[in-house]
Image (spheres, rainbow, N blue to C red):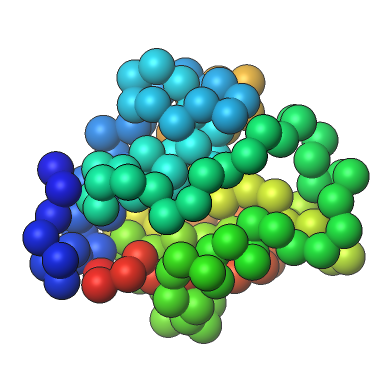
Length: 148
């Protein structure tokens, strides 16, 4: 479903994310039903909504964040999404997480209705998890898809 310019709604983002549920976890993957990681989930949703991705994600190792200086995931989100305050996040928005203070943000997912997070769970699959306090306190950024 590639939407007409200006017609993308947050519910479209959630609907696209839900189609990835159950997709196996695959490092650097981004294909629904075949395999994806957390970034690949967002890339796959982007392609479904907009067509071509805005930039190519280069190769990265599973421990890329531990070897990185800076915030490449947050910087990429800021280049292609609208930065919003965490308390403004609604279903269909992108959330980016860091595991602890002072480390590079390295995980992301889509906020879903009923306080849930759709994300690629390493070693398992794309799942819908409760967005509990542990996730909330690890949130490093919240972003809205363009035109949503």
